[in-house]
Image (tube, rainbow, N blue to C red; front, side, top):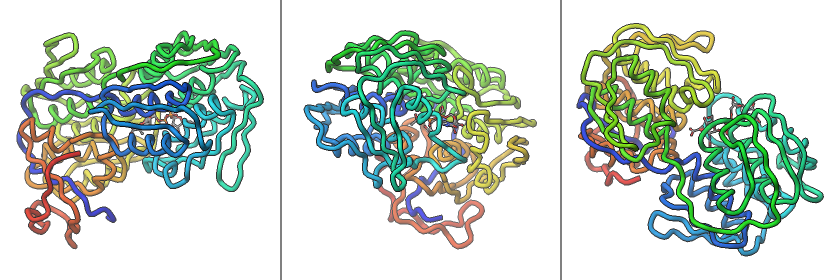
Length: 445
Ligand code: EPU
């Protein structure tokens, strides 16, 4: 455990009340990159102030984009670029930064990007991005660990992804929306963040058809303009709140959601016995006060259960009596949370990329979030567990959940942010950690 920042959660209270879901991190990250495609101002509304978003904005500033927060909106103005490279210091912190390659290629004709970093789970290559660029005539070379991409004229042609990739599809959209030629994308990713990017680009004057289906057609245009745009709500944040409500046997109303983006998550939870009430076009009441039973969950591409909710689902199922099986077909090795949940008393067996969960009571412990969604899972488990849990690795959680402590507190949970605390030498059951009251800081994201 290296991180000394933690969330301290005293679990066992059913969550209750209303929560407003934020704009989607995984959409906002790419929408802000679209600012590179125009010399006019672009305002992205309601952007969550997450560390990943701040890294993307720093990359944009580095290449010459003027960035200004106006409340929760971000105003971006790429009048003129002064660089076409993204510094390793930033790219190494976040995988999504590789998608700046497409936007820089479109605007400047060249880009130099390091091999991306990001959440530490399993292999996360970029080969499909590079093959797609090659198919469009982009020259990509490797220069001391940096990818250097160049185009000679506008990009055109046909890209066929061997398997869908969200980032790869976004990279191609950003690279080709601006230009004079036609591009066909086959086997494109279906995730709603793709359609959201295409909607923004079309709003700026692009001609993109079919986003959200496996076949996308881009007719490159000579010029794109600015505008204002609001990202879709964060379906992963919404799903995490749903699972936290379910794990604590709570009764929570989610507001500001797009129900059609959450169908598979709702279906699985409903099968487990959670009741849903449609209280408005964009609001669901999630009532988990009845009896719940085990269900199997396999994370797949959209519209299935998202891989980003696979770990939080496992945490919820660890509280439900019976045996569940959890698999992830998108990131089959995304299980860094398993050993940590076991420290909380979860009965889990991981073999051949299949997690068998025998549900039962959980207890508080000191645990470490190795990546963002492992963090989401540990928070879900901690909210349901008897006693006090400290989730170290708060930096991972801050990548994707804005003001998480404060918002969970608003639902009745006991959650505090701790900074500069040391994990106790024997970190096991409830109560082993030193007194944290002096280190408690306001629950802000
Ligand atoms: N893949 C390759 N080669 C590539 C690209 C992807 O083999 O060139 C593989 C990946 O290893 C993975 C699968 O294809 O097995 C899907 O990867 P994809 O490219 O779709 O993922 P991504 O674009 O890198 C985004 C989200 C992830 C989310 C995935 C899947 C962002 C910033 N990240 O990643 O979100 O898990 O899509 O939906 O949009 C998170 O928010 O915690 C997170 C990791």
